[in-house]
Image 1 (cartoon, rainbow, N blue to C red):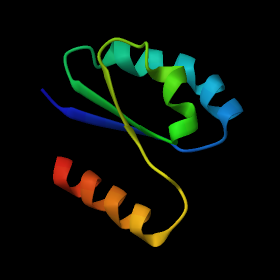
Image 2: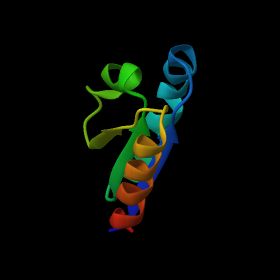
Image 3: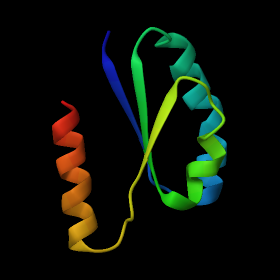
Length: 76
């Protein structure tokens, strides 16, 4: 099993448009551990997708950036 990270930090409209792509990635990697890194405002768009784990990331501030980098690196 592989770990797959999808990063979608754009605006709300971009996240809505990306849902079909995320669903295709989910289907292709059904046996893998899928993570989505997104802005808190976009979390609800993806929350109902089965098999998708979600991590939110505030996009402002150095502390938030460092926390997100540490989370990504920790997940290998």
